[in-house]
Amino acid sequence: MIDIYIRPLEENDAYVSVYWRNNPDIWKYTGSRPDNVVTIEMELNWIKNAIKRTNEKRFAICIKENDQYIGNVQLTNINKTEGEFHIFIGESDFWNQGIGTKATKLVLQYGFNKLKLSSIYLYVKENNQSAIKAYQNNGFNRVQLKDHFIKMIASV
Image 1 (cartoon, helix red, strand yellow):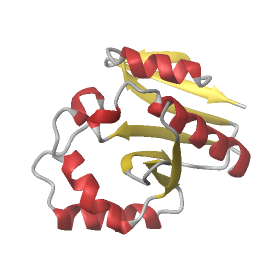
Image 2: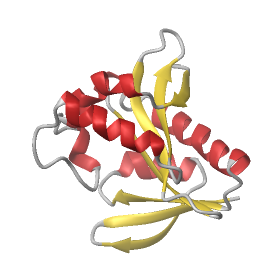
Image 3: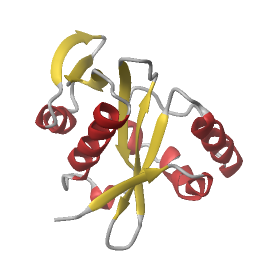
Image 4: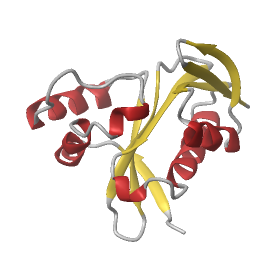
Protein backbone atom coordinates (compact mmCIF):
# COMPACT_ATOMS: atom_id res chain seq x y z
CA MET A 1 0.00 0.00 0.00
CA ILE A 2 1.33 3.44 -0.95
CA ASP A 3 1.69 5.98 1.85
CA ILE A 4 1.11 9.64 1.04
CA TYR A 5 1.16 13.02 2.70
CA ILE A 6 -0.06 16.44 1.70
CA ARG A 7 1.85 19.71 1.89
CA PRO A 8 1.02 23.26 0.85
CA LEU A 9 1.32 23.82 -2.89
CA GLU A 10 4.54 25.67 -3.86
CA GLU A 11 5.51 27.75 -6.87
CA ASN A 12 8.10 25.16 -7.96
CA ASP A 13 5.30 22.60 -8.30
CA ALA A 14 4.43 24.35 -11.57
CA TYR A 15 7.35 22.58 -13.28
CA VAL A 16 5.53 19.27 -12.74
CA SER A 17 1.89 20.32 -12.88
CA VAL A 18 2.25 22.06 -16.24
CA TYR A 19 2.49 18.62 -17.85
CA TRP A 20 -0.74 17.52 -16.17
CA ARG A 21 -2.56 20.62 -17.37
CA ASN A 22 -1.79 19.62 -20.95
CA ASN A 23 -2.76 15.94 -20.58
CA PRO A 24 -6.32 15.34 -21.91
CA ASP A 25 -6.63 12.11 -19.88
CA ILE A 26 -6.47 14.18 -16.68
CA TRP A 27 -9.46 16.28 -17.73
CA LYS A 28 -11.65 13.40 -18.89
CA TYR A 29 -13.66 13.33 -15.66
CA THR A 30 -13.44 16.96 -14.57
CA GLY A 31 -15.77 19.88 -15.11
CA SER A 32 -13.44 22.08 -17.11
CA ARG A 33 -10.19 21.90 -18.98
CA PRO A 34 -7.77 24.46 -20.39
CA ASP A 35 -8.86 25.90 -23.74
CA ASN A 36 -5.31 25.97 -25.10
CA VAL A 37 -1.81 24.75 -24.26
CA VAL A 38 -0.68 25.81 -20.79
CA THR A 39 2.88 27.15 -20.75
CA ILE A 40 5.22 27.07 -17.76
CA GLU A 41 4.80 30.85 -17.42
CA MET A 42 1.01 30.45 -17.28
CA GLU A 43 1.25 27.66 -14.70
CA LEU A 44 3.72 29.60 -12.53
CA ASN A 45 1.45 32.63 -12.62
CA TRP A 46 -1.59 30.52 -11.79
CA ILE A 47 0.12 28.90 -8.77
CA LYS A 48 1.49 32.22 -7.50
CA ASN A 49 -2.01 33.68 -7.53
CA ALA A 50 -3.73 30.57 -6.19
CA ILE A 51 -1.54 30.22 -3.10
CA LYS A 52 -2.16 33.88 -2.18
CA ARG A 53 -5.95 33.53 -2.03
CA THR A 54 -7.22 33.58 1.54
CA ASN A 55 -10.40 31.63 0.77
CA GLU A 56 -8.47 28.64 -0.64
CA LYS A 57 -6.17 25.98 0.81
CA ARG A 58 -4.23 24.14 -1.88
CA PHE A 59 -2.05 21.09 -1.28
CA ALA A 60 0.32 18.86 -3.19
CA ILE A 61 -0.20 15.11 -2.84
CA CYS A 62 3.17 13.42 -2.34
CA ILE A 63 4.48 9.87 -1.95
CA LYS A 64 6.10 9.39 1.48
CA GLU A 65 8.78 7.01 0.22
CA ASN A 66 10.43 9.48 -2.18
CA ASP A 67 8.54 12.82 -1.83
CA GLN A 68 7.28 12.56 -5.42
CA TYR A 69 4.59 15.13 -6.18
CA ILE A 70 1.73 13.29 -7.90
CA GLY A 71 -1.38 15.45 -7.69
CA ASN A 72 -3.35 18.27 -6.13
CA VAL A 73 -6.08 18.43 -3.53
CA GLN A 74 -7.72 21.61 -2.32
CA LEU A 75 -10.53 23.43 -0.62
CA THR A 76 -11.81 26.51 -2.44
CA ASN A 77 -14.67 28.95 -1.89
CA ILE A 78 -14.03 28.66 1.86
CA ASN A 79 -16.27 30.70 4.12
CA LYS A 80 -17.04 30.44 7.84
CA THR A 81 -19.00 27.20 7.52
CA GLU A 82 -18.15 25.40 4.29
CA GLY A 83 -15.66 24.83 1.49
CA GLU A 84 -15.58 23.20 -1.93
CA PHE A 85 -13.39 20.13 -2.42
CA HIS A 86 -11.29 19.38 -5.54
CA ILE A 87 -8.75 16.67 -6.28
CA PHE A 88 -6.84 15.13 -9.13
CA ILE A 89 -3.99 12.68 -9.40
CA GLY A 90 -1.76 13.94 -12.21
CA GLU A 91 0.54 10.95 -12.38
CA SER A 92 -1.46 8.19 -14.06
CA ASP A 93 0.82 5.47 -12.63
CA PHE A 94 -0.87 6.21 -9.29
CA TRP A 95 -4.48 6.05 -10.47
CA ASN A 96 -6.81 3.45 -8.92
CA GLN A 97 -4.52 2.74 -5.97
CA GLY A 98 -6.54 4.37 -3.20
CA ILE A 99 -4.44 7.52 -3.11
CA GLY A 100 -7.39 9.78 -3.88
CA THR A 101 -9.30 8.28 -0.96
CA LYS A 102 -6.35 8.87 1.39
CA ALA A 103 -5.80 12.45 0.20
CA THR A 104 -9.52 13.17 0.52
CA LYS A 105 -9.48 11.95 4.12
CA LEU A 106 -6.49 14.17 4.96
CA VAL A 107 -8.14 17.28 3.51
CA LEU A 108 -11.46 16.56 5.21
CA GLN A 109 -9.63 16.27 8.53
CA TYR A 110 -7.91 19.58 7.82
CA GLY A 111 -11.17 21.28 6.85
CA PHE A 112 -13.18 20.01 9.80
CA ASN A 113 -10.49 20.09 12.53
CA LYS A 114 -8.23 23.00 11.56
CA LEU A 115 -10.62 25.29 9.67
CA LYS A 116 -13.65 24.25 11.77
CA LEU A 117 -15.90 23.93 8.71
CA SER A 118 -19.28 22.28 9.27
CA SER A 119 -19.58 20.96 5.70
CA ILE A 120 -17.48 20.32 2.62
CA TYR A 121 -19.08 19.85 -0.78
CA LEU A 122 -17.96 18.79 -4.24
CA TYR A 123 -19.24 18.27 -7.76
CA VAL A 124 -18.41 15.12 -9.69
CA LYS A 125 -19.42 13.91 -13.13
CA GLU A 126 -22.05 11.21 -12.81
CA ASN A 127 -19.98 8.83 -14.99
CA ASN A 128 -16.95 9.00 -12.66
CA GLN A 129 -18.00 5.99 -10.60
CA SER A 130 -14.59 5.34 -9.01
CA ALA A 131 -14.47 8.90 -7.65
CA ILE A 132 -18.06 8.70 -6.40
CA LYS A 133 -17.23 5.49 -4.53
CA ALA A 134 -14.11 7.07 -3.00
CA TYR A 135 -16.11 10.12 -1.90
CA GLN A 136 -18.81 7.94 -0.36
CA ASN A 137 -16.10 5.99 1.49
CA ASN A 138 -15.01 9.31 3.00
CA GLY A 139 -18.49 10.28 4.20
CA PHE A 140 -19.79 12.31 1.26
CA ASN A 141 -23.49 11.89 0.51
CA ARG A 142 -25.16 12.49 -2.83
CA VAL A 143 -27.56 15.43 -2.62
CA GLN A 144 -28.29 16.65 -6.13
CA LEU A 145 -27.88 15.89 -9.85
CA LYS A 146 -27.70 18.73 -12.37
CA ASP A 147 -26.27 18.81 -15.90
CA HIS A 148 -24.54 15.42 -15.45
CA PHE A 149 -22.84 16.55 -12.23
CA ILE A 150 -23.60 15.14 -8.80
CA LYS A 151 -23.29 17.44 -5.80
CA MET A 152 -22.05 15.59 -2.73
CA ILE A 153 -21.66 16.89 0.84
CA ALA A 154 -19.69 15.69 3.86
CA SER A 155 -20.62 17.15 7.24
CA VAL A 156 -19.23 17.10 10.75
